[in-house]
Amino acid sequence: MNELAILDAMQTWHTPWLDPIVAAFTSTSNTGELWILLGIVLLCFRRTRKAGAGVLVAVALGAVITNLTIKPLLMRPRPCDVNPAVQLIIPRPHGSSFPSGHTTAAFAAAAALWFARDPKAPAGLVAGVTAAAVLMGLSRMYCYVHYPTDVLAGMAVGILAGLAAARIVGALARRRRPAPDIPRGPGHSGSGS
Image (cartoon, rainbow, N blue to C red; front, side, top):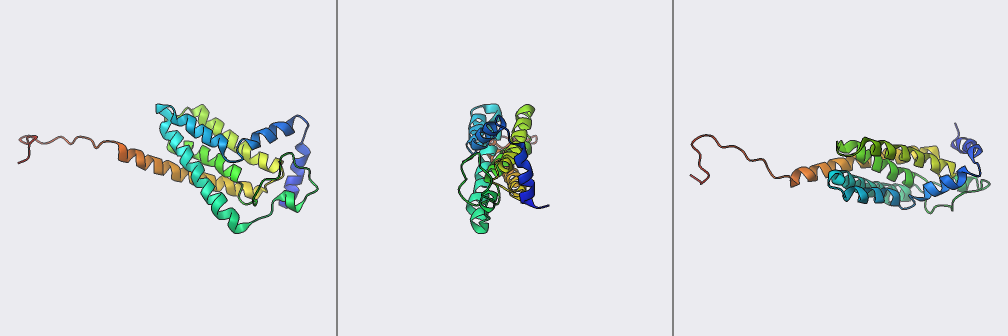
């Protein structure tokens, strides 16, 4: 199916009460600030510090891959540039369309929490961040600034960034732990032989 047709169909969802809510929500991540704030808050508590570090690393990785690598290479026009007849409810974002940076950041944060497998991270938080990530992707299409494939690519990049971040933070955490004491057999004293 034509991607513009999907976006045009979504324009029938607009209502006077929903537009300001979607516009406000999608704007919370213009530079990833919602997910960066989440990571910083999680860093402030000892039990969620590892998860917070994972979120921040994932969002940074996602931004580098999306905004500094793929977008400048592909320079895909946004749907609002292809069909300027649609009235935007947000200012036209800078840069090109593919992949969605907002979706990348949102899924990077969610995936970092999922892949951290941190039992100290509240399950409700992980589910809430995942739901917010899905809504972020939908909001970008609702606002007519990204195609469905932009959002799907942002999801993929974000999930890979979250996985990489969880592994990086996990490896760093293991390196920081002191090595366990190895018990010596009988007859060995603490002093050298």
